[in-house]
Image 1 (cartoon, one colour):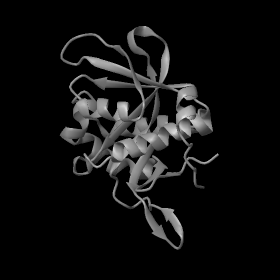
Image 2 (cartoon, rainbow, N blue to C red):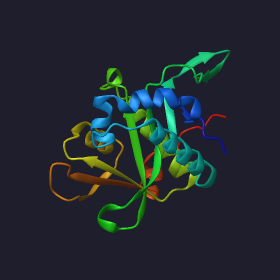
Image 3 (cartoon, rainbow, N blue to C red):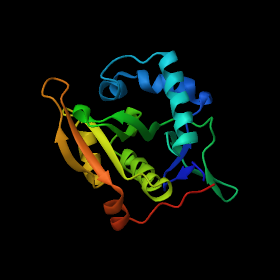
Length: 195
């Protein structure tokens, strides 16, 4: 099983410690962290912990977080070099389910602001869902989206995720979306995964 993915415009490679500096810069950007980290500044130690957790998840679960870079064609092979600029992150993580309903597999994504509005988050997320449902065999994937983050809610809907329930009311209220494997596979062609 390989964890390298490619879409029309993106190359997705599992995050590693060589991405640390780029991830720290990306995740500390005020527009990125606003919804991803509840507007808290992530530390270098936390970035290391996130990378280590992703590496463990890839080893044990078959999924984790992917660094997003622009795909380029070289010598007949579509790829992105680890040194190419990071444009975002997409992937899956274990998450405590809403309102104490057990552990879910949650999809996460973030893009550098200059790449917003180009459909890249949906493109990367579609590749992650194709991989999770078609290759790994995950049964259900959820998304926790801040009520104020209408762009992410639109992406979830574009992906065919259905609003499942609302979280607690308040300034940081959330809506929960879900996609299940049987519905996804019945409606999509599974992504080709490139070694």
